[in-house]
Image 1 (cartoon, helix red, strand yellow):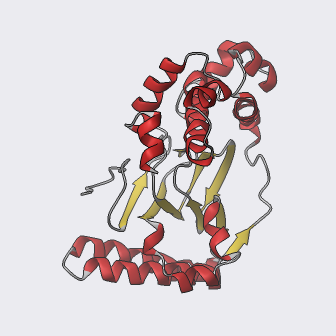
Image 2 (tube, helix red, strand yellow; image 1 turned 90 degrees about the vertical axis):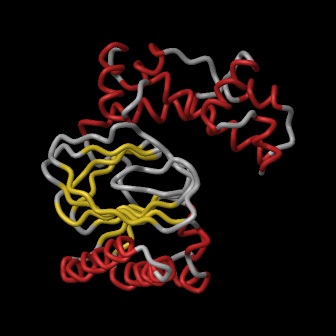
Amino acid sequence: MAMNGTQIPREPIDSIYTETAVRPGGYVMPHPHCHPYFELFYVESGSCRFFIENNMYDIHAGDFMLIPPEIFHYTRYPSGQCRRSVVRFNRADLDENVVRLMPQGEAFLSATRIFQTPEAYRRQMNAHFSKMISERKIGDKCSQAMLRALLQELFLLCDRQCRMLYSIPDEIHTTDRQIVRAARFISGHYMERITAAEIAAAAGYSPNYLSKKFKRSVGIGIHEYLMFIRLQRAAYELVATDDRITQIAFRCGFSDSNYFKDAFKKKYGLTPRAYRKQL
C-alpha cells in the first residue's frame, strides 16, 4: 500500500513505513484507530498523551511506545509542541535473532510496551530515526532492504540503551482517572446489557458529563467504544473457538445476530463467517 505524508494506513502494509511530524499544542488525532501491523512511536521532544488499552499515559522526550497490531489507541498533545517519529512494520520485518535478544523474546512483541532512552543516548536515537526517514524518501530498489536493516539496528539500540518499564502505574494522569474507570468498566462488562448510567456511576460522573469528557479524552463516544470492545472480542472468539456465530454474538453482548453481522462487516470488511474462514 502506498502511503504519503502523515496518512495512517488502516489496511495491511507491505513495506516498512517511517514518518516524523511536529504536532502543535492542543492537537488531537482526528480519529482513534487500530491497525493490523506494529507501530513504534518515539517522542523526540515535548510530550503527548496516549489512551491505549483502557489506560492513559503521558510520554515524554526519549520515550518509546510499542503498539502491537489491533490495539485501540488515541493520541492528544495537551502540553505544547511535540516532535514525534513513528515506524510501522510487520512481524516478518523483524529478524528472529533480533527478537530473541529482546527482553522476554517473542513475548516482548505481544503487549504494549513503554521504554525510555537515557538523555545521553537521545542524540544518537534521533539521528537513527532521521536516517530511516531519509531512506524512506530515497525509495529506490535498495530502500526496503536498507530500512529492514535499520529496523533491526533500532531494536538492538533500544535493547542496549533503553530502560524498559515493566511496572507502569495504572493511571499516570490523575485528571483522567474517571475516564480510565469508565473504559475498564466497559471492558469488564461488555457481555452484559450495560447502560450509560451504569458506566457513569462506575466512573463517578453524571452521564452527560462523562459522555462529553469521554469523547474528548478517547476520541469516540461511550457507545462507540463499547461497540469496538464487543466486536474486537467477537473477532477473537471467531478465531479461537468453534462456537456458532450466534453464540459468539450473544456472548459478546449483542442481542440481535443480524445486527452483529452488519456491525462486524462494517468494521472488518468481512462477514463473521468469511472472517473465520480467512483465518
